[in-house]
Amino acid sequence: MLKGGIVILSETKTLGGKQKRFLRAMATGLDPLFQIGKAGITENVMNQIETALEARELIKLRVLPTVGDPVEEVARKTADFAGADLIQVIGRNFILFRRSEKKTKIELP
Image (cartoon, rainbow, N blue to C red):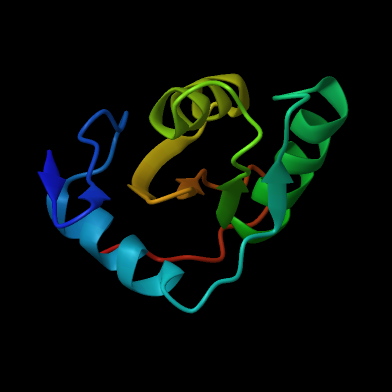
């Protein structure tokens, strides 16, 4: 669904609408932790994303203009590789959420 330049994806694995809204609100204050460049999603980038998701649960990433693929496609591939929920794509940024296996930090409504 497209609303004013914001793509809201409903392909999450386990989250309801209320939970996605809650996570989107939490992510507004986050800066992107990683940038995906022309090399795309490399093994090193995926390892770092996995570590960040385990530590933080909610992260924001940015896709640089040098990437040839559409942002939505890169975001979906990254979420699939990381086993995370794709919460939202806004412009060149996207938000991923995955519960920590060791210690849950975010309590969803």
